Image 1 (spheres, rainbow, N blue to C red):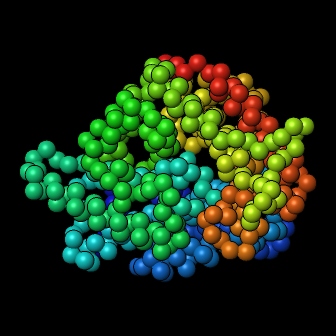
Image 2: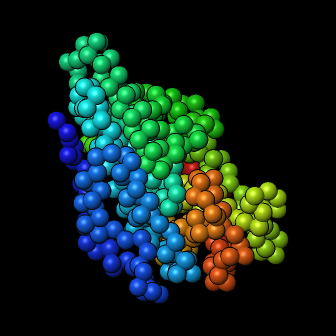
Image 3: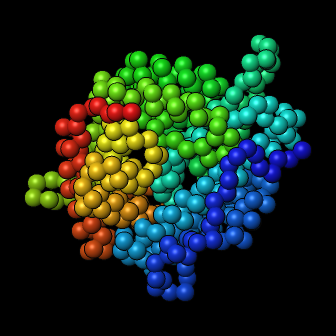
Length: 389
């Protein structure tokens, strides 16, 4: 039996995508996702076939027609919808591959998890894997049956990671993938692991907790992950010591802005004259917004949802939220630019933009976003690490 879908994961309604599209400068509309294209993705039967469709849909060349980050921003939505469709189908292909090998269908309910930029729905055109698996083991299973469940999901995790790599998503360099025993296991495994990380919040454990805060169930049964996420919230609630340890990771990245507001690009090597948008602007803002949200008991998974919650609760002024949101949306657009600045599409290039190739408007935006990131870092450093609820 080949599975067509599983669990309570729903495919979003993409019919209103045109509402997000800026006025085109030519008849070649970049980065679209139509119902017909979604159907074509769902009909694929191999990672190789799916990879070809991914290359077509994520062709960034037409974006050269759009020169300002404000005009690019809406295409980030489409890029992330494409990634979601691709990765969902990739998980389905992996499950079906195990059926073909005789391993059978998933023996217990499970969920496929996205972390990092994928968990926040903020992926760039070129993106790596940050994922995990969680599954629910019924109490009536004996030890040999439980071992068979673990073995199945070990095999599934390996098949997913290998398949997604073929599809064009290299594994995370930090080994945050569902082939790793750390990021794959039963609900009980996840609960115990969260307790270990929270009770010994070393630099690495703090990083793992922050990754888990940026999580989304992309495929499978979201109810399986619910007790894990609830436990994470309980661990962070009214825990100023743990939040203070998370703050040191949050403020790790240095914004490359020098005296008198001058952007400081790389001065040697391959990326000379370029600036790292991901680590120099985007992540400093993402991390500070997340820390403010967590410190006030806000557990939304996307940066824009976190900003909206901070606005609704009056924790930030409406004008400041509008400022952060406007710059953040434009940064999502700027994150689509790197493939246009480099001949190959290797993941290592994915964060760098060449300053000389940016429009004047985009350069000004990048500089003001850096100033905002520095301001947010200073605000975060002064934040009492307490939240209620």
